[in-house]
Image (cartoon, rainbow, N blue to C red; front, side, top):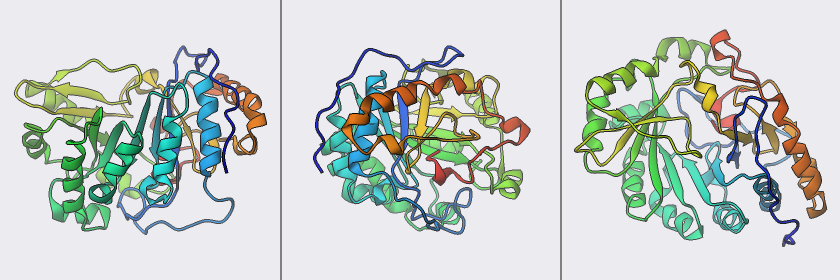
Length: 336
Protein backbone atom coordinates (compact mmCIF):
# COMPACT_ATOMS: atom_id res chain seq x y z
CA UNK A 1 0.00 0.00 0.00
CA UNK A 2 1.55 3.34 -0.99
CA UNK A 3 1.98 5.89 1.77
CA UNK A 4 1.30 9.57 1.22
CA UNK A 5 4.06 11.98 2.26
CA UNK A 6 2.29 13.26 5.40
CA UNK A 7 3.82 15.90 7.63
CA UNK A 8 7.53 16.53 7.25
CA UNK A 9 10.01 16.73 10.10
CA UNK A 10 9.53 19.57 12.56
CA UNK A 11 12.14 20.98 14.90
CA UNK A 12 12.41 18.92 18.04
CA UNK A 13 14.73 16.93 20.20
CA UNK A 14 13.78 13.85 22.18
CA UNK A 15 15.07 14.41 25.70
CA UNK A 16 14.16 13.15 29.16
CA UNK A 17 14.04 14.71 32.61
CA UNK A 18 17.60 13.50 33.32
CA UNK A 19 19.14 15.57 30.54
CA UNK A 20 19.69 12.67 28.13
CA UNK A 21 18.95 13.05 24.41
CA UNK A 22 17.80 10.28 22.09
CA UNK A 23 18.91 10.45 18.44
CA UNK A 24 18.86 6.65 18.13
CA UNK A 25 15.96 4.19 17.69
CA UNK A 26 16.31 0.42 17.97
CA UNK A 27 13.42 -1.07 16.00
CA UNK A 28 12.71 -4.80 16.19
CA UNK A 29 11.35 -6.30 12.98
CA UNK A 30 10.58 -9.77 14.32
CA UNK A 31 10.76 -11.90 17.44
CA UNK A 32 11.66 -14.97 15.38
CA UNK A 33 15.21 -16.32 15.24
CA UNK A 34 16.72 -19.34 13.50
CA UNK A 35 19.46 -19.81 16.12
CA UNK A 36 19.26 -21.54 19.51
CA UNK A 37 21.80 -19.48 21.43
CA UNK A 38 22.39 -20.87 24.90
CA UNK A 39 22.07 -17.41 26.48
CA UNK A 40 18.89 -16.35 24.66
CA UNK A 41 16.71 -19.05 23.04
CA UNK A 42 18.27 -22.42 23.95
CA UNK A 43 15.09 -24.26 22.95
CA UNK A 44 14.60 -22.24 19.79
CA UNK A 45 11.98 -19.67 18.87
CA UNK A 46 8.38 -20.53 19.62
CA UNK A 47 5.75 -18.39 17.95
CA UNK A 48 3.07 -16.84 20.12
CA UNK A 49 -0.43 -15.78 19.17
CA UNK A 50 -1.75 -12.29 18.79
CA UNK A 51 -1.13 -9.62 16.20
CA UNK A 52 1.64 -10.10 13.69
CA UNK A 53 4.77 -8.00 13.39
CA UNK A 54 4.75 -4.43 12.11
CA UNK A 55 4.12 -4.09 8.37
CA UNK A 56 6.22 -2.00 6.00
CA UNK A 57 3.59 0.75 6.04
CA UNK A 58 3.45 0.81 9.84
CA UNK A 59 7.24 0.91 10.05
CA UNK A 60 7.46 3.93 7.73
CA UNK A 61 4.85 5.85 9.71
CA UNK A 62 6.68 5.02 12.92
CA UNK A 63 10.07 6.17 11.62
CA UNK A 64 8.56 9.39 10.22
CA UNK A 65 7.23 10.24 13.66
CA UNK A 66 10.59 9.65 15.35
CA UNK A 67 12.35 11.65 12.63
CA UNK A 68 9.96 14.55 13.28
CA UNK A 69 11.24 14.51 16.87
CA UNK A 70 14.90 14.69 15.87
CA UNK A 71 15.73 10.99 15.57
CA UNK A 72 18.54 10.53 13.03
CA UNK A 73 19.62 6.89 13.40
CA UNK A 74 17.62 3.66 13.18
CA UNK A 75 18.97 0.23 14.04
CA UNK A 76 16.94 -2.75 12.80
CA UNK A 77 17.01 -5.69 15.18
CA UNK A 78 15.12 -8.85 16.07
CA UNK A 79 15.02 -11.79 16.76
CA UNK A 80 16.78 -12.17 13.46
CA UNK A 81 15.71 -9.33 11.11
CA UNK A 82 17.05 -11.04 8.00
CA UNK A 83 14.19 -13.54 8.33
CA UNK A 84 11.87 -10.76 7.10
CA UNK A 85 11.29 -11.35 3.40
CA UNK A 86 10.63 -7.63 2.96
CA UNK A 87 13.87 -6.50 4.63
CA UNK A 88 15.22 -4.83 1.48
CA UNK A 89 12.03 -2.76 0.92
CA UNK A 90 12.07 -1.84 4.63
CA UNK A 91 15.65 -0.56 4.41
CA UNK A 92 14.90 1.36 1.22
CA UNK A 93 11.76 2.95 2.66
CA UNK A 94 13.49 4.06 5.87
CA UNK A 95 16.41 5.49 3.90
CA UNK A 96 13.93 7.73 2.08
CA UNK A 97 12.54 9.26 5.30
CA UNK A 98 13.75 12.87 5.64
CA UNK A 99 16.03 13.32 8.62
CA UNK A 100 17.24 9.72 8.88
CA UNK A 101 20.98 9.78 8.24
CA UNK A 102 22.03 6.29 9.32
CA UNK A 103 20.38 2.88 9.05
CA UNK A 104 22.08 0.00 10.84
CA UNK A 105 21.26 -3.69 11.12
CA UNK A 106 22.08 -6.25 13.79
CA UNK A 107 22.13 -9.81 12.45
CA UNK A 108 23.39 -13.27 13.33
CA UNK A 109 25.15 -13.19 9.98
CA UNK A 110 24.13 -16.54 8.55
CA UNK A 111 22.67 -14.93 5.41
CA UNK A 112 25.37 -12.31 4.92
CA UNK A 113 27.17 -13.92 1.95
CA UNK A 114 23.93 -14.06 -0.05
CA UNK A 115 22.15 -10.90 1.13
CA UNK A 116 24.54 -8.21 2.33
CA UNK A 117 25.10 -6.60 -1.09
CA UNK A 118 21.36 -6.12 -1.50
CA UNK A 119 21.07 -4.53 1.93
CA UNK A 120 23.91 -2.15 1.14
CA UNK A 121 22.38 -1.21 -2.21
CA UNK A 122 19.03 -0.52 -0.51
CA UNK A 123 20.61 2.08 1.76
CA UNK A 124 22.00 0.24 4.79
CA UNK A 125 24.91 2.24 6.22
CA UNK A 126 26.17 0.12 9.13
CA UNK A 127 26.18 -3.50 10.19
CA UNK A 128 26.60 -5.40 13.46
CA UNK A 129 27.17 -9.15 13.27
CA UNK A 130 26.93 -11.61 16.15
CA UNK A 131 29.95 -13.90 16.36
CA UNK A 132 30.38 -15.42 19.80
CA UNK A 133 33.59 -17.29 19.08
CA UNK A 134 36.40 -17.46 16.53
CA UNK A 135 36.42 -21.24 17.04
CA UNK A 136 33.89 -23.12 14.93
CA UNK A 137 33.27 -25.86 17.50
CA UNK A 138 32.65 -23.36 20.28
CA UNK A 139 30.44 -21.28 18.00
CA UNK A 140 28.30 -24.35 17.31
CA UNK A 141 28.02 -25.14 21.00
CA UNK A 142 26.93 -21.60 21.89
CA UNK A 143 24.54 -20.90 18.99
CA UNK A 144 23.18 -24.34 18.18
CA UNK A 145 24.19 -23.93 14.53
CA UNK A 146 27.25 -24.85 12.49
CA UNK A 147 27.29 -21.54 10.58
CA UNK A 148 30.70 -20.20 11.63
CA UNK A 149 32.17 -20.33 8.11
CA UNK A 150 29.26 -18.41 6.56
CA UNK A 151 29.35 -15.71 9.22
CA UNK A 152 33.12 -15.24 8.96
CA UNK A 153 32.88 -15.08 5.16
CA UNK A 154 30.03 -12.59 5.40
CA UNK A 155 31.95 -10.27 7.72
CA UNK A 156 34.89 -10.13 5.34
CA UNK A 157 32.56 -9.47 2.40
CA UNK A 158 30.79 -6.69 4.30
CA UNK A 159 34.13 -5.06 5.07
CA UNK A 160 34.69 -4.69 1.31
CA UNK A 161 31.37 -2.94 0.59
CA UNK A 162 32.00 0.54 1.95
CA UNK A 163 29.79 0.51 5.04
CA UNK A 164 30.37 3.34 7.51
CA UNK A 165 30.91 0.68 10.14
CA UNK A 166 30.99 -3.11 10.39
CA UNK A 167 31.10 -4.37 13.96
CA UNK A 168 31.09 -7.77 15.63
CA UNK A 169 29.11 -8.56 18.78
CA UNK A 170 30.42 -11.22 21.15
CA UNK A 171 28.57 -12.10 24.34
CA UNK A 172 31.19 -12.63 27.03
CA UNK A 173 30.60 -16.04 28.65
CA UNK A 174 32.65 -17.35 31.54
CA UNK A 175 34.00 -20.82 30.78
CA UNK A 176 32.83 -20.75 27.16
CA UNK A 177 34.68 -17.98 25.29
CA UNK A 178 36.34 -15.75 27.88
CA UNK A 179 39.86 -16.92 26.96
CA UNK A 180 39.72 -15.73 23.33
CA UNK A 181 41.05 -12.18 23.72
CA UNK A 182 44.47 -13.05 22.20
CA UNK A 183 42.77 -14.57 19.14
CA UNK A 184 40.58 -11.50 18.71
CA UNK A 185 43.58 -9.19 19.02
CA UNK A 186 45.25 -11.09 16.19
CA UNK A 187 42.01 -11.03 14.14
CA UNK A 188 41.86 -7.24 14.42
CA UNK A 189 45.41 -6.62 13.30
CA UNK A 190 44.42 -6.21 9.64
CA UNK A 191 40.61 -5.89 9.76
CA UNK A 192 39.02 -2.44 10.04
CA UNK A 193 36.21 -3.52 12.32
CA UNK A 194 35.33 -3.41 16.01
CA UNK A 195 34.71 -6.43 18.20
CA UNK A 196 32.46 -5.52 21.12
CA UNK A 197 32.41 -7.80 24.14
CA UNK A 198 28.94 -7.66 25.71
CA UNK A 199 28.55 -8.56 29.35
CA UNK A 200 25.91 -11.26 29.82
CA UNK A 201 22.72 -9.72 31.19
CA UNK A 202 20.15 -11.30 33.42
CA UNK A 203 16.73 -11.81 31.78
CA UNK A 204 13.49 -13.28 33.01
CA UNK A 205 14.33 -16.85 32.02
CA UNK A 206 18.12 -17.25 32.28
CA UNK A 207 18.83 -17.14 36.04
CA UNK A 208 20.79 -20.41 36.30
CA UNK A 209 22.70 -19.76 33.08
CA UNK A 210 23.54 -16.25 34.25
CA UNK A 211 24.93 -17.52 37.56
CA UNK A 212 27.15 -20.05 35.74
CA UNK A 213 28.47 -17.88 32.92
CA UNK A 214 28.32 -14.22 33.94
CA UNK A 215 31.69 -12.45 33.92
CA UNK A 216 32.11 -8.77 34.63
CA UNK A 217 33.15 -7.05 31.41
CA UNK A 218 35.30 -4.66 33.40
CA UNK A 219 37.69 -7.58 34.00
CA UNK A 220 38.37 -7.78 30.27
CA UNK A 221 38.53 -4.01 30.01
CA UNK A 222 41.29 -3.86 32.62
CA UNK A 223 43.27 -6.46 30.64
CA UNK A 224 42.98 -4.28 27.52
CA UNK A 225 44.29 -1.22 29.35
CA UNK A 226 47.22 -3.21 30.71
CA UNK A 227 48.06 -4.31 27.14
CA UNK A 228 48.21 -0.73 25.87
CA UNK A 229 44.74 -0.28 24.38
CA UNK A 230 43.53 3.31 24.63
CA UNK A 231 39.98 4.61 25.04
CA UNK A 232 38.53 6.37 21.98
CA UNK A 233 35.93 9.20 21.92
CA UNK A 234 32.32 8.05 21.72
CA UNK A 235 30.16 9.53 18.90
CA UNK A 236 26.93 11.26 19.91
CA UNK A 237 24.73 8.65 18.19
CA UNK A 238 26.96 5.70 19.06
CA UNK A 239 25.89 2.71 21.09
CA UNK A 240 26.83 1.94 24.69
CA UNK A 241 30.28 0.49 23.97
CA UNK A 242 33.49 1.99 25.31
CA UNK A 243 35.86 1.43 22.36
CA UNK A 244 39.61 0.99 22.57
CA UNK A 245 42.31 1.16 19.90
CA UNK A 246 45.98 0.27 19.80
CA UNK A 247 48.77 1.27 17.40
CA UNK A 248 49.48 -1.43 14.85
CA UNK A 249 45.89 -2.67 14.77
CA UNK A 250 43.36 -1.69 12.11
CA UNK A 251 40.48 -2.80 14.33
CA UNK A 252 39.13 -1.78 17.72
CA UNK A 253 37.77 -3.52 20.80
CA UNK A 254 34.60 -2.38 22.52
CA UNK A 255 33.29 -3.15 25.98
CA UNK A 256 29.58 -3.08 26.81
CA UNK A 257 29.33 -3.36 30.58
CA UNK A 258 25.71 -2.88 31.73
CA UNK A 259 26.60 -3.62 35.36
CA UNK A 260 29.24 -0.89 35.50
CA UNK A 261 28.67 2.31 37.42
CA UNK A 262 26.83 5.06 35.54
CA UNK A 263 26.18 2.79 32.52
CA UNK A 264 22.74 4.34 31.98
CA UNK A 265 23.97 7.93 32.24
CA UNK A 266 24.97 7.80 28.56
CA UNK A 267 21.77 6.18 27.31
CA UNK A 268 20.84 7.66 23.92
CA UNK A 269 18.38 5.13 22.47
CA UNK A 270 14.74 4.17 22.60
CA UNK A 271 13.23 0.86 21.53
CA UNK A 272 10.12 -0.26 19.70
CA UNK A 273 9.14 -3.92 19.68
CA UNK A 274 8.17 -5.89 16.59
CA UNK A 275 4.52 -5.47 17.59
CA UNK A 276 4.71 -1.71 18.03
CA UNK A 277 5.25 -1.06 21.73
CA UNK A 278 7.60 1.73 22.78
CA UNK A 279 10.05 0.61 25.48
CA UNK A 280 11.81 3.39 27.31
CA UNK A 281 14.33 0.89 28.73
CA UNK A 282 15.36 -2.61 27.70
CA UNK A 283 14.50 -3.71 31.24
CA UNK A 284 11.42 -1.52 31.66
CA UNK A 285 8.28 -2.59 33.48
CA UNK A 286 5.84 -1.55 30.76
CA UNK A 287 5.42 -0.77 27.08
CA UNK A 288 3.53 2.08 25.45
CA UNK A 289 1.35 0.90 22.53
CA UNK A 290 2.02 2.91 19.37
CA UNK A 291 0.40 0.57 16.87
CA UNK A 292 -3.11 2.06 17.06
CA UNK A 293 -1.61 5.30 15.71
CA UNK A 294 0.27 3.56 12.87
CA UNK A 295 -2.78 2.73 10.78
CA UNK A 296 -3.21 5.99 8.86
CA UNK A 297 -1.16 9.03 7.89
CA UNK A 298 -3.73 11.30 9.52
CA UNK A 299 -2.58 10.08 12.95
CA UNK A 300 0.96 11.42 12.47
CA UNK A 301 0.60 14.37 14.85
CA UNK A 302 -1.05 12.24 17.53
CA UNK A 303 1.73 9.66 17.19
CA UNK A 304 4.43 12.32 17.55
CA UNK A 305 2.69 13.66 20.64
CA UNK A 306 2.36 10.20 22.21
CA UNK A 307 6.07 9.44 21.74
CA UNK A 308 7.21 12.83 23.01
CA UNK A 309 4.88 12.66 25.99
CA UNK A 310 6.43 9.46 27.35
CA UNK A 311 10.00 10.63 27.94
CA UNK A 312 9.20 12.07 31.35
CA UNK A 313 8.56 8.52 32.58
CA UNK A 314 12.01 7.22 31.60
CA UNK A 315 13.87 6.11 34.72
CA UNK A 316 17.41 7.22 35.49
CA UNK A 317 18.68 3.67 35.04
CA UNK A 318 17.90 -0.04 34.98
CA UNK A 319 17.53 -2.14 38.12
CA UNK A 320 19.62 -5.14 37.11
CA UNK A 321 21.68 -4.86 40.29
CA UNK A 322 18.45 -5.59 42.18
CA UNK A 323 17.68 -8.57 39.87
CA UNK A 324 14.80 -6.65 38.30
CA UNK A 325 14.55 -7.55 34.60
CA UNK A 326 11.20 -5.94 33.87
CA UNK A 327 9.16 -7.36 31.00
CA UNK A 328 12.20 -8.87 29.29
CA UNK A 329 11.94 -12.67 29.12
CA UNK A 330 14.81 -13.02 26.61
CA UNK A 331 16.73 -10.70 24.31
CA UNK A 332 14.93 -11.79 21.13
CA UNK A 333 11.69 -10.43 22.57
CA UNK A 334 12.83 -6.80 22.31
CA UNK A 335 15.98 -6.79 20.18
CA UNK A 336 18.68 -6.42 22.79
